[in-house]
Length: 165
Image (cartoon, rainbow, N blue to C red; front, side):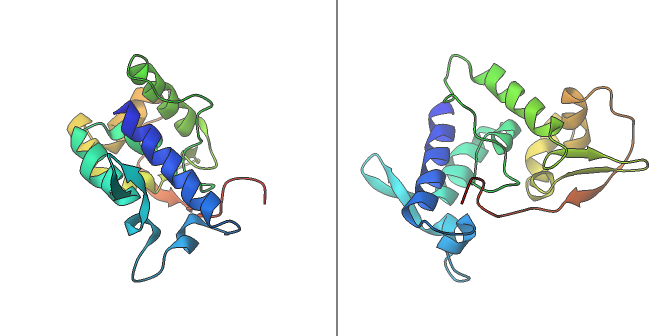
């Protein structure tokens, strides 16, 4: 799992770098062929897409924290760690990554007076969080002090390239 998370992150960053300057990773693709479905690198001598790594390799492993570890080089994506993921440290790295993402009010979790807003990642991949009790239970695991407010909205997703331009 660590290998494939690192693979996804490297391929996403390389995709942006190879097409620089772009305002968004999505600019690399088109309406008919989104960036996620374009070859992003080679794995085992075969061309592979970001979509294949995410949806055919990582998601079937049943670990929802991957969504807070894979990075699409966009402002609203999870932040890239300053270390690669490793098999020996993966559980603690994923827990730390989830905590960091949910502590970021700009992209992960924002608590208001009468509602909680969360990243659209939780909407897009809601099914992946179901085995652990759902999105609210997942968030409560990392933010136990949260009041029992309903999740009522998603934080706007900013697809702009995350970095200096």
